[in-house]
Image 1 (spheres, rainbow, N blue to C red):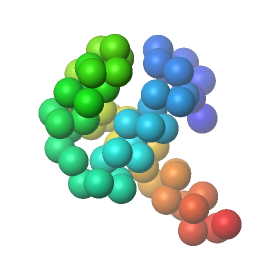
Image 2: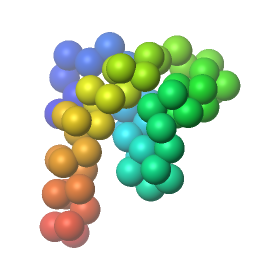
Image 3: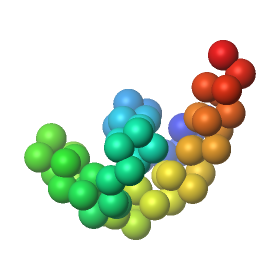
Image 4: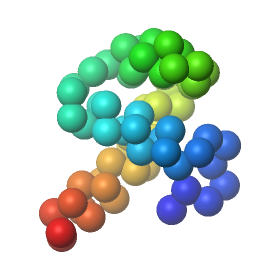
Length: 63
């Protein structure tokens, strides 16, 4: 699922979870990750949400 991504899967999952669970903006999540020493652009976060959120929501509904 995360093959070819430049960031570890844990970072991607955590970032998408912030967006889905807390309804934060991409820029707010960017700031949170920067505080954790993870430099990721808000546009990248947008792409992650578009790509991985439907897959994660589908897997949660199945379990």
